[in-house]
Length: 440
Image (cartoon, one colour):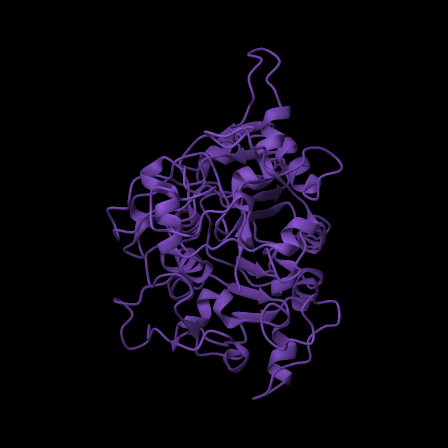
């Protein structure tokens, strides 16, 4: 199971872009006023790739004509201390190898910010180091991520966006919902539709109904403020229809007939499914196919998160390729761009975590909020007429920054309402048109 992401902002220039402007929502039901013309945010979460994975060669090739220096911070052309070039990351190599990305593995690989034990681990007892952890996708039209690189060229690329905690996906997904540490790695799955097909044996649920203070989360905060929100999960309807069983795996899944992740819907990928107030709530958990229906009916919720079924998330290993995930993202972005909601919609594409792959930039210091170590950089891009087109942001960002932006735009501009990192991280303003006056 698990995710990763980039940021896409699909917005039309409003007639006036002034501070505190409250645009008219394109949703059928009136929503509370927003702090900017952004009436919808769509967060697409993909899985398990670092910034260097997808953008190192792109950064090497994209040079500022005045300074003659790369405009973004790509990794070294050989692994530090060796003459070994990176593995070429393509559909074939992605399908064959899944790096170890448990927290106990990543922390010694990061080695206090030296980033020197991903290739091998001679100075530790770790056996996680592997030359295949050092892998870059090609730059240009032949690259499997050429579409993402095109988006980066058109828009604003964040090259200091880090996974919130070292380790696996579910732990990082929770930061998109609570802005704080909940558990390590993929320790738990949700007690929700589909849990019977999960390979994670331990299940948990957070009761935000009887104890909303201890279990604060983004969904509850939005609902309490009458802001509409939904997670769209691919394969959710098939899982519902299967009842207590598991749906038949699509034949296109590389490990079919496995009737579990990555071939079928996994509730652990949806952090809202861990909370009593929202688990399997029809207003907040919908099948991905419903997105097109909601766009056509002009009923896109204000806050949207989107998750592909596992084998379309670009997750390495088990025969899973990059290309189907890129196609899923392109399909989603195209649907939004051609909808009536497009001119008021910000689309964010990001990755849940780096998947154990090497990235040369040292993560920030351990968070003083929850005492959790950050993981490597992951991709984030902002595209559209309200992005800072053709620029690169060096502002330190993470998943909690998305929470902070949503709080600012929809919850009266007040940060830190979840009592986590949302009180201390940067907002997304460095990726957006300055006229919007979104804080950085």
